[in-house]
Image 1 (cartoon, rainbow, N blue to C red):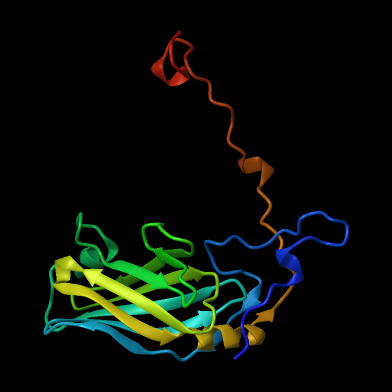
Image 2: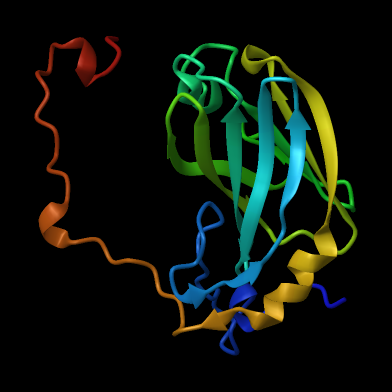
Length: 202
C-alpha cells in the first residue's frame, strides 16, 4: 500500500521561501477528496451504538463521520454527544500505528476535532477532522461516553486504506490563503484611560 508522501507545498520553493499550505485544522478547500468506504461498529450497549460510517481522504488528513444511535428516545441525546453536559460528552481518541495520538480535547501529536453535526433524541450524526493522514498499519479509535453508559472501547481500523487513497485526491488549483477584506478590519479600540480594560495600573 502506498503511504502519503510530502509534496512541494509542504516545504520550500526553489527560491528558499516557505510555501503556504492549508491550515491543519480543516480540510483543504482546493481539493476533491477520495472516498474510503469504511464502516464499523465502534461501541455498543443494550441501548446505545456508536458507528464509524465513512471517510473522505484529503492530502492533509481525513474527514470522517460517526453516528450515535439510541434504542429508545434519550432526552437531549445531542448534548450527551456534543458535550453540553459537563463530563457527559463523547470522548474520542485516535492512535496511529507509529504511536502518534490525538483527542477531541487537543491532547497529543495529531489534530482531531468536531466539524458539526445534527440529530434528535434517537440518532446523532457528527463529523470530525483528523490531520495528518494516518500511516499504514492499524488505526485505533477509542470512544468513551459515560453519560450514555458506554465504557471505554478500542477498535482497530485499517490505516493503510486511508494512506493508499491519497494519490486519488484531486487538486483543483493551487491553494492560497483567503485574503482578509480590508473593509472588515477591526478598528482600534478607544478605551477610557482610567478603566480596568486599558491595562493594569502602575
